[in-house]
Length: 115
Length: 112
Image 1: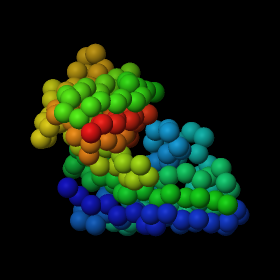
Image 2: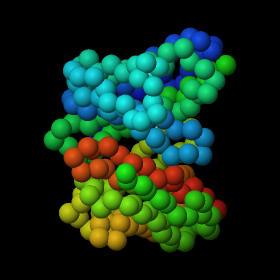
Image 3: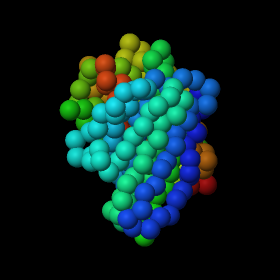
Image 4: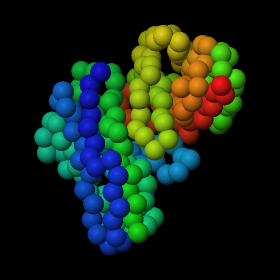
């Protein structure tokens, strides 16, 4: 299957700093990328959907100024958590989809811990 | 708004048993339904994808069925092994939006 690479796999940062997470589709062009967040013992919750070259669409309750998403190319999307706080500590996962495929492929996830 | 429910939340079985995991969804207007495996602290591994026009998919010891009219899907695991221990998530892809709505998962433990 198609490969989606997410980096870093884990990160610890100080409260108030910003963290950037990268999501790359390695062997296909991702026309759409999705960002999810998963709190302990909870399911994955969609944060936003981004289509290449256009602004991301955020789900209700997700602050677009805090979670900056850039999908500048067909193989790369980034999520920047700005002014991170301890409550932002979570597991963040991206998935990528190509227009002609039924399946979305997932990255390995990033464990963010804000101290 | 789509809601996906998985029952049971946790399941413990002895090695070798056959088992069934259940998934239900409220909106039948789905593009497909996927089953994933998630190991602790890890990402998702796609197991099976069933298109909305299909009834089931099989891969090795895994068989997934889909009944859109009743809003249900099941994942059948034959001859379970300790290596099958993980959390299993089902996700419904919305028709048109391609957004996945996940259930909370079933945590499976296979006891040697």
